[in-house]
Length: 341
Image (cartoon, rainbow, N blue to C red; front, side, top):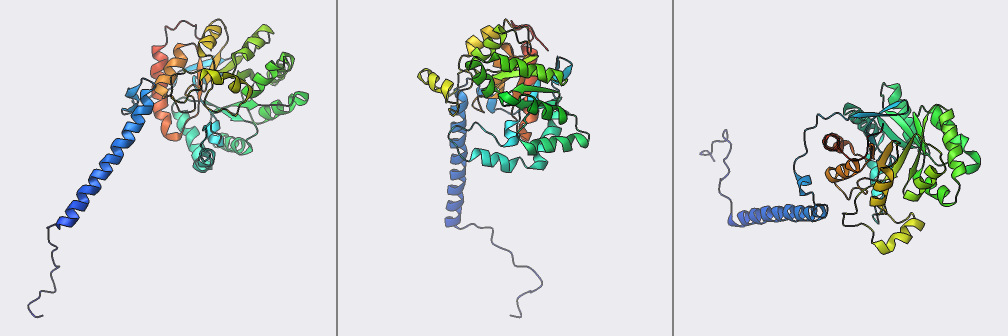
């Protein structure tokens, strides 16, 4: 024992046993294989959109969104959608997505998302007036100096059109619009009169007034009735994605909103009809619930006539989306349809 120097640490051998070396090689190979498989899967999905450049590094993050006006309200032409923040998700048959969104978008994350939006010139968001938590957070955000504006999505009872409009005005909304499901249903029922009365009440409360629709015939009906909303919200996206509905399923889509992977049934007819309207148009569902990459979705919607886009965004997507939107907007300046707003 006397020959051992207790004051010096014992050095471990630099040699790695053959068994351990084989294990490390196998582990590295397995990890590389998993990355390759994941990349192949992602490439296969993105390949359906013919935009493989989407997997490259995101563009510069210093973009500030161009602005426009609807009535007296100045809006960034990219608008923050509210479904994700409220935990609503068109997730096809994946049951866990909505609970996951609600867990992710806690109060702090919602406020952070709005702050990131403002930094990029995204100065408006959509919120459903039935989401009391989101409205409370918006009030708190504004009280702390936040300036993001509220466009209120409303779905009133026909015998009480005024109530949700008064709520929208009370919480400081700059505009309100009829929920797309209601717009479709009321016009299907031939009740343009209720739509017109709602628009009048919204305007009487000092807000810009709009109508949202999934179906083109809804907007055609409103135009024929001469109701003159300040803006429309209409779905628009290409059908070039893997999970798009088949043509024979169209009747099911029209009659059942539970179908969850088809937003714009007739994009070409929508583009043609909207090209004749001299009214601001906010396109939504432009990414088909995440099935289309923003690089392709923004380009398609802006080049084909949309004046503004409403897009649900996670906080980590905002910089990239702002840059992609700005690039697509600049590239679409000479499009066929005049810019409104």
